[in-house]
Image (cartoon, rainbow, N blue to C red; front, side, top):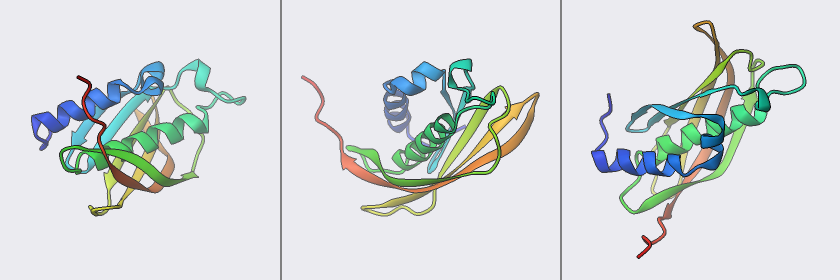
Length: 147
């Protein structure tokens, strides 16, 4: 269930679909509300590190993307989102068969939108918190539509 207008949902889903990395790893938006976004993705064999865990780059990408779309969900019409800065604390190995990232807006500002994200590894229905991210998103003008 979402509390967002249909045009905002469509804008976010269209933007997400254009992200090649998210498409490559099979990620999907599994939750979307005002100031919140959940993204779920398998841990592909091609994205594992030398010990067999999901690579930290995958964890970071999902957390950053979830936080970014949480921010886009609160932005005004005609705005897009860019990450200004984001920090990650890796808490445990990404051991499992999928990752779930949940991004949240901490405060809605005109120029800066502080965000956070949690990323869990999931295996056999059990979740382990593996990372916390904290960052800042910046609203930017959307490029003009192609004619």
